Structures are given as C-alpha cells and as structure tokens.
Image (cartoon, rainbow, N blue to C red):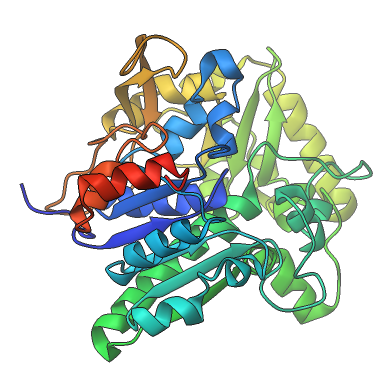
Length: 402
C-alpha cells in the first residue's frame, strides 16, 4: 500500500483536551508519526472525561487514535533532557500551554531551533502570544464571545445561544493550526528553515465569522441576532417546524432553487418573496411556517425527493449516523475500545464506532491503524529508537522522569 501523505513526518504533541489533539489527529490520520506526551501523574484530562469507570473516554479514544503514547515529566531536569533528544529528530512540535510556560520549562522555540533548525513549532492558545489578553484563561465559549460570534447566535429578541459545537476550538484552533503546520512544512522543504506558528483561537474564530464580519467592515452595521440575511430574515433561508415537531431546513437564495421549491409545494405566489425583508418578508415566513406545519417531516422528505431545491430534513446525530449517504461515504468505522481499570494489558474490551477521516484523496486509504495509546504505552519503544539503553530507560523510570 502506498505510504500516506505525511509518512516520515514526526510530530511531538504536548497538547491536551480538544484543539491540539484534534489538530494532531488530522495529521496522524494522514500518516504522521504523532508522539503524544503526557505527564506521568496527570496525563491528558480528556482520558477521564466520562468518569473513572469509563476511562479512557470515547472522546479521548477518538481524538488520539493513530498516535503513540509517551510519558514524560517535563518538570524534572531529566525530563527536559529526554524532550530535547526527541526534538532533535522531530519535524513538528505542537503545544497549548499558556504563553511563557515552554520558556520556563526550557523547551521553547528558540531553544529547540538551536538544536534543530528545521523544526516547525506551533503554539495554540486562546488569545495568542501577544496582546493584552495573552495570559488570560479561557475556553471555546470565551473565544467566541470575544470574537462577536456568540452575539450572532440565537433567536431575534432572545439571548445568545450556546452551540454544542466548539467553533473556536475546532475551526479556530485545530484546523487553523493544521493548516499553518502544513504550510510551514512546505516552506521547510523549500527554504530549509523551520518556522514558529502562533495560533490564537480567538483571532481565527473572528476571521471565520466571515459573513457578518465583512458585512460590518463594509457597512458599519452589526448584524442583528437571528434577523440577518442568513440567520432568519429571509424566507428562502431558514428552518421551519413540521407537523410532528421536527424541522426542515431550506437554503435556496438562488432564484432557480427557490422557484423549484415554490412550484413543488404548489405555492407559486411565494416566488416573488424569495429575498423579501421587513413586513413582506415576515408575511412570507409566516406563510411558509403554516405550509410546513401541515405535514410531518417524513411527508416533506418524500414530497421534495428529486426536487432540486436545497431543502433538507434537520436530522439528529443518531439519524445522521444511520443516514445512507454517510454510510456510502464511509464516514463511520468500527473499532475496539479498552478500559484502564479492568484487568491487565487491555482489560475488558467492547466495540465502539468512531468518525472516519473525512477527506478522500486519490490513491490513498485512511483508517484507524492504531488505537489511542495507553498512558506511556510506547515510551520504551521510542526511547530505544533514540538509542537509549535498557539500563538508562530503567533509571529514568525509577527516577519518575518517564
């Protein structure tokens, strides 16, 4: 089988929880050798996200598959020495500590660059390495709040809503970091020198709010919550309740799609109201609400089957997982899962379903080739690759370094 695109790229992953692990997951799925470093005492908090009886959590197992596990106490001098040995042959380092922490540990970019000039060093933080907020703690909701995103989510006249999707963590942190890392690796091949990448999840979230952001930059007008062109104001772009309390989503701003919809539901009088605003828009939305409430969601699915009109049912996650399209696309894979607290060398196991790597790249096959590591599972293996003797490895273990 052809090697994956990132085969022979070694990444040292110092991150925990969601943004960093999801960034390195995408790179590991594409073939990178990701070494996940965890403290011997604490480890990644995500392991225990489902409680001690279900550790490691499914969340941890999905976000850290295809990686190798390495235990290392960076607070000890011996831990720093081991890390520097790892870094000498690495291509990428990803960390998500607050600004200044890696410098205090003696493993910052300038230190690593001195021993490995080709290193790509990526720091993922909430607010970046500079600026007045650089040292503030935060999570996804805070970053979205500062970026003006949270203010945009919700119903007209209501409070901001909290989405169950970590927009800043994933789009702002994980994907932006992966994009920067891949760009820097290309530049290393071209220029021969590594790069430092400063990822502010708040910065990236702000830029990803592209439609309301550009609207404000152009007009000076802040889009009203739940009442802007793509958030509820237009009849042709919204969510409508059905007879059985389910919902249908219509996204037909183009005239041809809107016309096809209006003709399919036998309401041609609505064709002219596609982009209606104000009173006319409200009247059209109210009429659409009446139309959709006349039948259950299943009826609407059948009614609009084959009509090229950009209308879809609002599925829950269980329905999405069972949907024929995702099945045909191979978007879910079955794997084994293990538990830390049952037996030795794996304990009880059960089957679990994970999301698949979402990209399809010609001539490559992607899958779960390695389950998420147990804490420190590959420490000895990796140290042996670095040339450490058995005696030295045993000494490091005895001293609490690994």
